[in-house]
Amino acid sequence: MDSPLGFGGLHTVDLIGWNGEQTDRCIQDLLRNIENTILTRPEALNIGDKRLHLPVFFRSVSSHETALRPTAALHALRLVPPDALLVSAYDIVNEPEQQRNQMIVDLESSRSVGTLVLLDSGNYEASRKQDKSWDVQKLHEALQITPHDLALCFDELNPPSDIEEIVRSVVSSVERDAKQTKKPVLPIIHAPRDAQGDILFEVIPEAIKRISQELRPVAVAVPERELGSGVLARARMIYSIRSALNGLGFYQPLHLLGTGNPLSIAIFSAVGADWFDGLEWCRTVADAETGRLYHLQQYDFFSWQSEHAASQLVQEAVASAKIAYAGKVIFHNLEFLAAWMTELRDHLRNGKIERFLTAKLPGGTESMRLLENAVPEVFG
Image 1: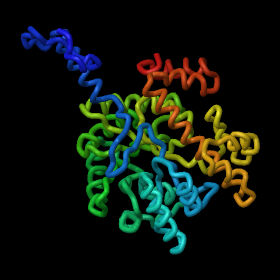
Image 2 (image 1 turned 135 degrees about the vertical axis):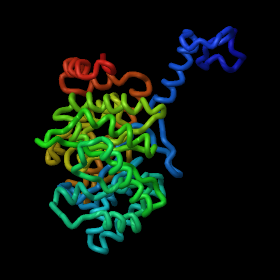
Image 3 (image 1 turned 180 degrees about the vertical axis):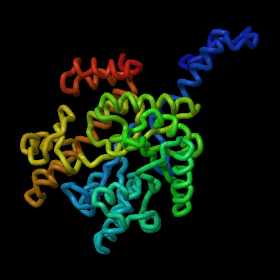
């Protein structure tokens, strides 16, 4: 029977005469269509009063080894507002009072124009600076004074190896930290290790699935660097995590911590990750044509790209004698990232991600063959 006028574009199955058999081809088609709809990445998430398009890259702000101090980075992001940014609780608490107050003003300003602010636990900066004084109470202090839309829980950097203990520890951390804010708190899962210090990769997908099942968080986070030694191994692990999450029966967004390389973002988006954050935008310079990153001091070879930027503000910034060299690089990168993420989303939604990657990856089709071998379920 034909669908009524106006409903011809809907996907339907004919169940007239179905006798209740679960093996019936039509009911199997219906169940498969429902599953595919539920488990497909949504185009966007509504978080509070903000709409976050997926996949999304959070511009990270940090005091650790970047071209800009947190205050300067937030000011740049205020001028060129991104979809989302990540700021560290460590920097909020430890910056001098005047700089901290300015950071708070800039964060509130960014939020007012639609940028989603994610407050990180601060453990990244504390571990890199070997600051053993950083603790959960200081994160709670930051939660009280920092304008934010989401926060990451105070993470256990050396988790137990048993899945039950991992789940219990992470859920407890989220529930504890959630008492300090009215905004959603997201779990961070670190990879467990055996007695020799080797990562127990086989535990990661199930642990993430169990924690997601317990909390049903807006997103669940895991550090990219703990998912394998190279991009192919990491892509395979991310696919394994996505496969485990699909067993939940609802779509669970996955956040990769520390993924700021544009090519990695594209690959990992294709295999199941949704949120990314990284510091490359204020550490390196991007070739806007290929998405490849170069040393910040090589911006001279790419400055012509900035001169033709779509944003008038970026054009003026890179031409201004008042803007320092590092500042010109930052504006160049911010323009590039906005365009890159838009292009990536378009290719993913139109089923053309392999074309996108073939055009961008070094080696083109040869690199795609490596991806096909690593994750044939996606690229095969």
